[in-house]
Image (cartoon, rainbow, N blue to C red; front, top):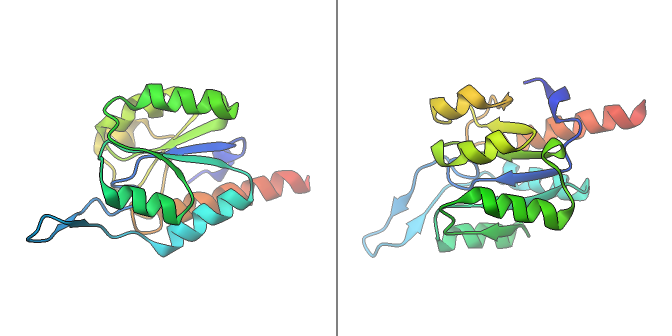
Length: 165
């Protein structure tokens, strides 16, 4: 990954499934869903917050597991979102961000429109091929297994290096 691409990022919007998770779901016999998330990704979110990076989760799925993870990480979340771009635009306006300073991290075809809108499109290495084709940055780690932490570490390293100049 060329970390330099991340140097001007001040805001990141994330998809949930396949980014925060490994894109699998465990469904119990009663219909309750569970997913696997990475604790190191959670630490990465905390590091980004401490660095002043604005963040939001924009998810197609209206699922309590998305809300629970967002609450634990103190992240704003919009769920049940079939058309993510208007939500992304409204959020960017509200926080004073521009496409040039905003990144979007997604893994599937319903993320492509947002990824094309922002300045930096990020995909986990196990994203859908159509997403990998348009990504400016592809992580070495897969979704739900450290991809967010990888982005956090690289973004913060680049920003520290820029500040030291």
